[in-house]
Image 1 (spheres, rainbow, N blue to C red):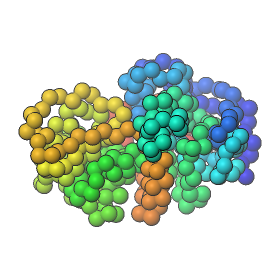
Image 2 (cartoon, one colour):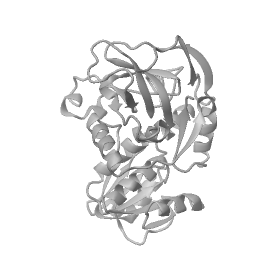
Image 3 (cartoon, rainbow, N blue to C red):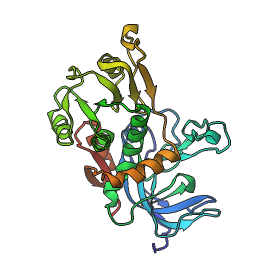
Image 4 (cartoon, helix red, strand yellow):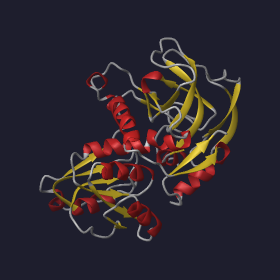
Length: 337
């Protein structure tokens, strides 16, 4: 059983884009109807958090507590919540609320709901000691087999990477552009499934290329280089638009380029010949509950081992700076201890 929540908590909040997060003391939020109140154990630091802090995402709710890779323990249940218990470990992802009644929600495509709200962007997230979350978008997590700090990256890097890979179909040769948190998780899925992957990094990032090779990459090199074989699919996790035409040129006929980020710089023009041959460009928009249940059931069977760098809650700005500089292997995770 979890102890009752205290009256107040520490939280790192964004008051104005372009400025650092502030450490604030706030009342602990109470669980409303359909919500869980959670004591946060760990929260991953995602590139989306960086886009939010740097002012690259439109119209955030301010002030806002970022963080959408939340691992926590249930401390209270709101009215109407079923299927959870106090003390249970759960995860909370980016998609935090949907209307439940639109054509997208009613067809299992709630990730496209026009009224959707997002954790750590329009709903306070997990850069705090406590949070509340819609029970529809909370997922049960292993109780003791894996530390919370290692589970946190699965809630976005893992889930978005999994959806990106799903959109790529049954591709046998997969290029991964940007070898960070999502890539190092999906690389393990690909090897588990017997598929080949090719890692593309910044020109001089030999450390990330070595990391990719240790995880089983058939080839690792600069995004400016040509892989030894044409790709059946390319997954782009880096927010750089020029990678799209570059990936297209390396993708075989009938292949697919999947843009997996929420934000990307402008995509430059390219020749129709690069697209011709039934090549496709797709984007990833959030996740569905089915994605969450499917991936979180798959992860322990592989088993996926995340590479993390932990930071205390009050060092969230340092974690964001390391991510901005490309100075992390795997994922940064905030801890509340």
